[in-house]
Image (cartoon, rainbow, N blue to C red; front, side, top):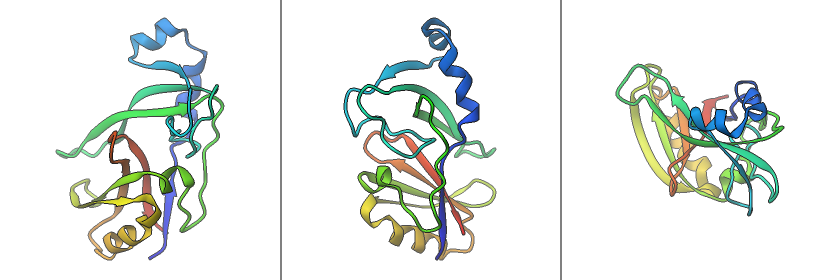
Length: 155
């Protein structure tokens, strides 16, 4: 089963980097400097920030369906990040190196399947979930901290 992992677009986050620490705090956003790698996985570039890079930690609504599964969680975005465009079937290293929660949703936003897998073996779970024609898209989450990581669509 062909699939495509989708990063978040950079545009909705760019303006935040020019805001003061106080203005960010008023929005619940924290400016940080990465002090290790891995540890600060950017949802736009789909790579870990390098030590010394500036990132923002913010709440992001990744599941905006009008269902009980509507959800938001913390994400990191690197300053100056450009949107990653993984090739069909490509799993970026930032996902390969983590324990992932894979959640399958219907077109209406209802969760129909869920599993946990080491990132190095995620293709098998993606394929199995997409074998169900009722599953329209998947969400990947970092299983240990629980943060949203990326969306997966059929390709």
